[in-house]
Length: 87
Image 1 (cartoon, rainbow, N blue to C red):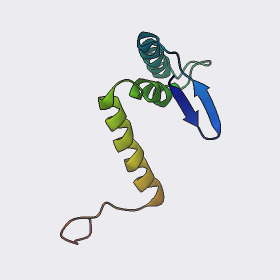
Image 2 (image 1 turned 90 degrees about the horizontal axis):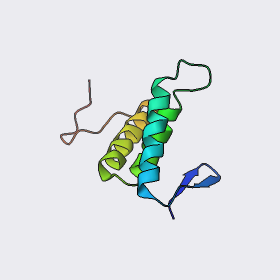
Image 3 (image 1 turned 90 degrees about the vertical axis):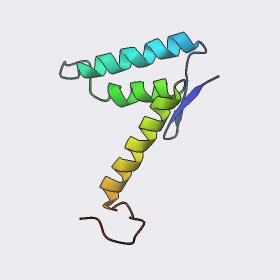
Image 4 (image 1 turned 135 degrees about the vertical axis):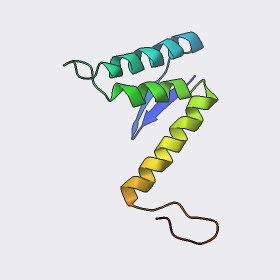
């Protein structure tokens, strides 16, 4: 069974791939309407996490975004192979 872990909390995802895909797409579509009172932009990354369970391309994209955000947050630039600093 697929599980989603967010911090110290663990959530069971539906067993059916079709239901997980539909849930992920609905979360992303709801996140695009994040300006409405009930829905929020937080639904977009959650939908991407749910979709990453079944689609390797989404999983790679999530990883790239996560690494880029971590580097931005900590202020660490990407190392260049020739040792030159990024400008």
